[in-house]
Amino acid sequence: MKRDICAIFFHKSSTDEKPCHGLVPSGENSWCKYNRAQATGESYSHQHSLPAAVITAIKPIFRDLARPDLVRKCLHGQRQNPNECFNSIIWNHLPKTVFVGMHTMKLGVHGAVITFCCGNIGKCWVLKKLGINPGENMITGLQHCDKMRITDANRSAFNMAKKARQTSRKVKKELEDQLEAKEGPSHAAGQF
Image (cartoon, rainbow, N blue to C red; front, side, top):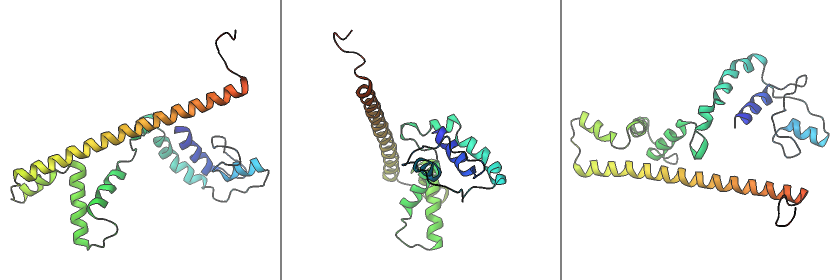
């Protein structure tokens, strides 16, 4: 992933005078038009390169994106960007398919912030501040919602990690099979 982040940075800084596509996948199926053109023998002109001043300004951002502690968060199905989760909570409170007024939207976003920061149980704190004492059923229900959310997140992360491991094993096995088909078996009973 770090290599891919660096590949994007160098790809966008490439010019006709100084192409920097070494980290980008090569071949006719590459997402990089320059490398596709190289593979097919066509000519290519860099049209959407970023100016040197912009490249200098965004370089620290790309360096931060490639930090090992940030990239590590993406392992086992975790997200690097907590805003994705926050946006999901907002859209659960305020579906995109329903038009709401500004007042309703503000209340929905405030509710999403409370849920994101404190869980559903945070709504009880707001009610207490407003002078409303939430009942036991409400407290129990909100605690149950929070437990279910955590259980679902753990299950999802476990399933994603399991699927990633299976995919990794499958890819490794396919590579080994291809290598064995080229070179023959590396070991077998009575071969040596």
